[in-house]
Structures are given as structure tokens and as C-alpha cells.
Length: 266
Ligand SMILES: O=P(O)(O)OC[C@H]1O[C@H](O[C@H]2O[C@H](CO)[C@@H](O)[C@H](O)[C@H]2O)[C@H](O)[C@@H](O)[C@@H]1O
Image 1: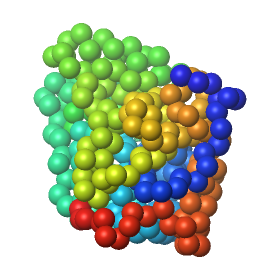
Image 2: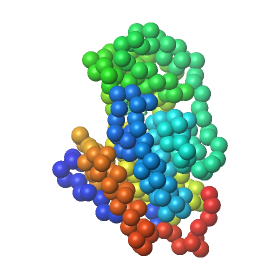
Image 3: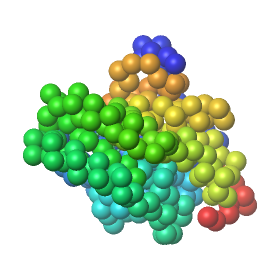
């Protein structure tokens, strides 16, 4: 783990590479409520161009559900791992392997809603994952965390609690961004490419570790503590500028693409 001041800004990737993108706090500025974020046309265009330049080797790796991501970015649809890898869409137009809400998580959501739901706390029900958002009520983060941690003792084994960005999430142990990235790298469209992963949060650390293990490029946005990432970008603006520079460099000629004879789909 390294601290912010020692980490370099990433150079633009060369050779065959693949792009994995966290969403909130990386591509989008945070907002008071998950539905209040804004996706501009400029960002849609940038992502669509990068996806084309990378011959499809681009995927969202997010804690949101894929349905929520599609809603935000519509009409753009990309490969995606949602719910920290519990859901996947392995091809751009393929089916989503979605996960349902177990009865005990539904009961817990209702219990927390009964206590905190009317107090600017937003309880996001994402199938097997429960997120309690306290961005609009920071004084309730401690109580929200306590409720979720207490529930851990009553639930079947196999869940963990993760401190989120202004909130807390309860999720199955196998929800992990590193595994989601590895799953994509096994697909023909990603074969032989060096993974580049941009993320901003605790939940992204596992993804950084995964790409580091295979000599990929790990880039943490706005770190405020130790990180496994080997590069940093100061904020969402810098992340978008860096992606824009990659896209422009590719348009200018040096594409970083795999030789066309090596292309396979998907
Ligand atoms: O993995 P990510 O793509 O970064 O998604 C992480 C979580 O993002 C969303 O919540 C966060 O962003 C919201 C909008 O800015 C903000 O209101 C909230 O406080 C943040 O925690 C999303 O709602 C979650 O489901 C994701 O897990």
C-alpha cells in the first residue's frame, strides 16, 4: 500500500491494453443521491470512442446494478460487471446475469428502512447487496454501520460489511471487483491485453490488486489514504482529461490496438 504523495500520474498506455472503469467518483462526480448524478453527452461520446478504439476491450466495473448503469448511460450500452461482479454483461448487447434479493436481505432492508428511511438516509436495495447511503445525513453513518454490522451476526455466513463512499454496504463475500476484471480478461476480446483500471474507492482496491498481479496499470482517483494503486489522478476532472488524452492519442495515430489479424469476437 502506498500513500498519495509518492504515486505518479499514469503515462498513456501503449501496446495492446484493456480498459476497466469504476463509475461513481471516477467518471461521475458524486451527488447527494445515487439517482442525482449527471452523465453528459461528452462522456458518452468519449466512452463510445474508446470502446471502438479498443475493439471492445472496455468494461464498467461498478457497485451499481447493470440496470442502473444502463439507465444512466442510455442509449450507450457497454460490457459491464455490476454489483461488484455479482452481475455481468460479457458482451455489449448480451444478456445480464442478474442476482435476486434473498429473503433475509429484504427483511433487513425493511428493518433499516423502518428506523432510518425517513431521515435523508437512502436505502438502496440491489438484490443480494444492501447499501445504506448517508451522504445527506452524515450524522447517521455511525448508526447505519452499527445496524448493518449487527445484522452480520444474524445472517448466514458469507456476507461482509464494506464502508462505502458516504455510506455502508452489506454484500456477499464473493462480490469483488478483482474477480470481475479477471473474468473479462479470460474473454477473447480481452486476450493478450494489459488491464488498466481506474477507481476511487475502498471497493476498488481489490481491483487494483488484481491488475497489479498481472502487471496491469492501477489508477486511484483522489486517494485519501493508503492504496494498492500504483498511479493517481487527482479527481474526476483529471480522470476524464486523462481518458480524453488517451482517446485523442489513439485518433492521432498510435492506437495501442491489437493487430487486426489477432482480433476475435467477443
Ligand atoms: O463502484 P462504483 O461505480 O463507484 O459505485 C459505488 C456506489 O456508487 C453509488 O453510490 C455512490 O455514489 C452516489 C452518487 O454520487 C452517492 O450518492 C453515494 O453516496 C455513493 O456511495 C451507487 O448508488 C452504489 O450502488 C454503488 O455501490
